[in-house]
Length: 397
Image (cartoon, rainbow, N blue to C red; front, side, top):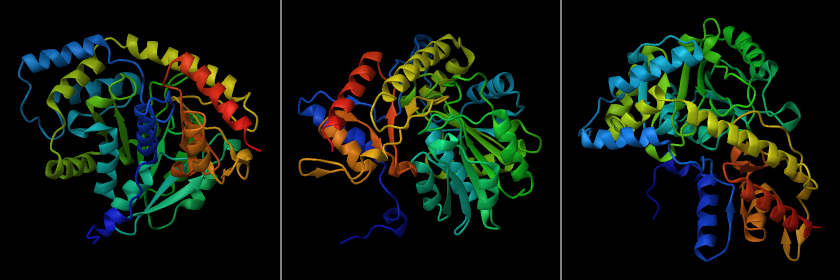
């Protein structure tokens, strides 16, 4: 007897979490699996941030915080946006949530009515279309293939906008592709958006600091854009704090107030101790952020070089984040024994069960010809993973 809501029945489960779970099950059976499926730094949270959390416990930061977060944390975010991004906000224009995932979802739920359209460039992070569906909106997918470095053009954006378009979700640096929109590319998108002032941009900038081409560029910097952009960011990726669950939005006051109202009814403020840790992340030394970025860049170079040697893989050069998104449709239709590879999901499952390497099929990201590999793991794991992948693929014909 299925008494679940239509809302829930319309959602797809998270493919990345499913692959991570499957690889954990194989590991539990004693199989040596290299997990490239999960988007999480393999570094530990920097010491000074952990110390701040311990001090917060000793200082009894154990009660409810204000819904949008402690003033100390919001002020630290205001300073960060000013210093690093050249953007002026006040603390009341910041709202902290349980991770950037909730921050994106808050913005979508606060903005989208039934039937509203939300433009989502593909490849996209798996949760964006599901969040729009949760809000009873319509995801409008705009696809950009490897030949355009997985980035949409102004012409594509223009063609996708209709009178029903309410918002656009832009992720740069991108999960799952690692593509980064340059200042010139963002300016081109803004030229189109200027003609359609009703469209709000949700700019997911969670990978801001994992960038291999210089300074991060925010779409909010362009004339007229700050008042219609919701910046989403947080501490998970830059500071290796995925489990601490602190994200934030910075945006126009009317929207931030709406997100506070929404969050006030269903989670209240995020974890008090995590907030004090996040405050230390933003106000303390940024040296660990750069150390991790350098390590990710080295790994990026390594995995790109190795993946280019895999027959049938088409590989681009990611400019940020810690993902490689090779095009692998060369293998569709091939088989090994009674096992046939029909699509990227089959290929990912084959690589897991035969090669013992966990990746994620691209269909969940809106790119059914690709697979996603996270290189947030050691150099040794990267070398061994690609060796196993080559070996497993060689059995297909």
